[in-house]
Amino acid sequence: MHCLLTFVFLLSGTTHAKNILIINPIFGYSHVKFISKIADVIADHGHNVTLFQPFHTNMKNLDGLVKNKNIEIINYYPDHYEDLLKSEDQTFTALWDSRLANNPVLFSFMVPKMITGEFEKTDTQLYLDTNLHAELKSRKFDVAIAEAFGASSFFFAHLLDLPCIPVFSAVRFEIVNELFGQPSALGYTTRDGSKGAPDAGFLDRLNDVYRKYFEDLGHSGIFQYQNELFQKTMARPVPSWKNLVTQSPIFITNSNPYLDFAVPTTATIVHAGGITMDLNKVKHVGPLTEEYENILQERESTVLISFGSVYRSFQMPDNFKAGLIKMFESLPDVTFIWKYEEDDAEFKKRLPKNVHLKKWVPQTDLLADKRVKVFMTHGGLGSTMEVAYSAKPALMVPISGDQPQNALMLARHGGAVPYDKFELQDGEKLTRVMKEMVTNPKYQKRAQELFEVLSNQPIDIKMSLMKHLDFAMQFPNLRSQVPEINQVGLIAHYYLDVVMFLALSFAFAFYLLVKLLIKVYFKFIGKKTKTA
Image 1 (cartoon, rainbow, N blue to C red):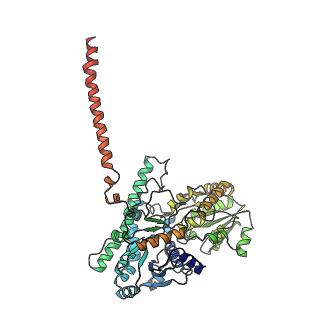
Image 2 (tube, rainbow, N blue to C red):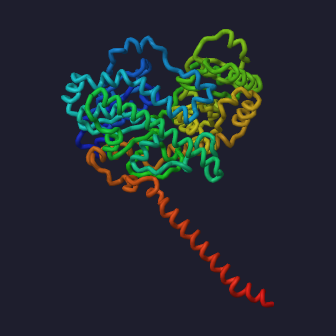
Image 3 (cartoon, rainbow, N blue to C red):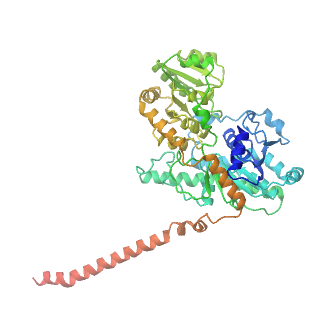
């Protein structure tokens, strides 16, 4: 299959294969999976790809992410890798029921230090490893491609004297999107705690501005901390992260315009959302194992429950679990398959017979089966894409990060329902919502409609990505597609000075008009009244 794809792509336009270094920091599974898929697509297109993977965590489930056998993978294990192996996988248990974790103010101060702390040791070693620099330089790469979640990969590419194209594994990263000319998404996207347009009121808009300000402050803090680390490590003046990131003519994101909110954009933003989905595999899923076949035959309707790999079900607060158990008991005609990562004999005793706990589930295969009626998920972008491409209704229970916006993004199409994680403890409400989704055909109908749109997009995602990438490598210094108005400040950008001038002018004119009318009144009408 990869050979066939490569041949097709070669016929469609690539005549000069490029030597490409893709920097894939190992720190988050969804990030790594997306970058690995990007590597596959580029290699299938006929380019020579080297995937450089510096380890920041002890992630182990990497086998099989890269499909193309022609890709050379260089795993970079830092000196403290043995310590990483001894550390436990981060599962962020506190985020389950912490109201403070998603507070924008705390996010802006805590998250930058937390994330850069995870990166610091490996990044410092990368910057100082001159033998590695020499080895990679000797390979004569034409360009680098790197995850834009932070700045360290761009500083590393700078040490290798390579132009670097930014990629982001989530839908958008506003502080970077805006550097590439995309206007502010305020009002275009629905933010946590706000109503979307046209129902948004003043308080919703105020909440949007409040959240955007502190989110941007937190995200820019990540880049700034890494900028300071790079300068401290190199002990000399270094370029700013903004200058390095914006040297690229394009910014590749994991957004799909037919799934995402409708937002204004520029030609520099390349949408690659859905590239991790194999449409042919989705439409032609093989048979389930006998174990799952027997489970799906138990009842007419089945619900799949999974909160991903970071937010693990067994670490869910007890009051949340009690709400789910109440739902299980209230819906005896529905089978529930729950991804529950720990063997707990005592907990199993609390569950009714219509619940099956599994440490791991074949999620894609189950979502493709029509007997599975609803997917209850945390709303990570990977799961959001999978459920959108499976034509399956979803009950979205976001925990943190970009998940609230992913839930709202999918819900706007009508096949998904966002659900507050703190209301998991309300078993009666959870039962009402789940029963409605299982029995009301409108959710399945809307989910199917979205799937038809996604599977019939007018432009092939992979072809679009490669055309833009080839174009960017041909014209590496092109910046004409970034609006020049982005170089001015907030006042000039939104013509606030003109609005203020016109408002004051009208106010002054109205004031003069009123004074004139008062004078006329007293001069003519008032005099007549007095005479009479």
